[in-house]
Length: 378
Ligand SMILES: C[S@@+](CC[C@H](N)C(=O)[O-])C[C@H]1O[C@@H](n2cnc3c(N)ncnc32)[C@H](O)[C@@H]1O
Image (cartoon, rainbow, N blue to C red; front, side):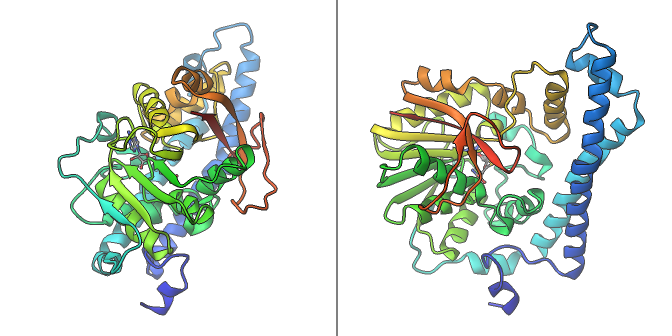
């Protein structure tokens, strides 16, 4: 292993050359500029527009029409989409260049965990129909390699602008575990399932937090799962990954103590979300716990700008299920699936050290400072 790789957070992540790094840093800074300098201006213009038209048509569609008269609005939308496309193209080129090296690193001798993919797996339509986040090929692209997973790993870290745990990109999983320790401090799970695990960035924190547990991760993408397996092994975590839809798995009734997911619902359909919550309930033994974490931007569509922002995210970042997931009533969905002690709230981003201190409450502390969490007991 090269000295450069050995210094990384985990040695499997694609290492950019000088020029590739310059490009990726440029894209990161462009995205930061769009998000922190241009977007707040749009919010101010929207507030002024809403004030000026008080009493008149204040729907998201009407607001979009009025925003369109401001030149900076189109600039914002164009830069938002273009910077996202640039992100993936800069990462894809870098990953493809080192494909052989990455495949060699992914060949694990004497693994602690396992990976099971299914050539006959039927990828759900809501995953297949678009390249979510504009990632070429989408979540389930599979050519038999680990490269889609490698692209997601490097791209995800750049996409999160370093705010989700740097190159490990693991603060969501840490926060889900912090929620378990906050609300269910006596739970000592022997079997844990991470639904929609992707490349396992949130699964490894579960394995680290509960080192004696048997940890499973499922997703619909075979390439991501192969990569997740190798990545977890490089990080010293034995996780069992399998290609399955969280809507209906092949695990036995009551076979888990803890079922969790991180930001999966906004990539599924509303019907799938209901099926997944019901499947979580089926898989838990009596007294077992479900924790489903989402982006802390839930809204009831009562503010035209919030609603419009969600629609723009859906449209310009290929997130067709964004609106449904962010306006769902998770408490009702959990209760309808048979969960008790259901709570919804915001868990402050914190490492899952057993010492805490953990903060959980009804108010969001802001994006990347807290995550929305719905939890309940089977
Ligand atoms: C935004 S990613 C999050 C990945 C990971 N949980 C994390 O925190 O980094 C959402 C993941 O959910 C997966 N997913 C969506 N619908 C699914 C389903 N029905 N069954 C299993 N995985 C699903 C996607 O393939 C994707 O990997």
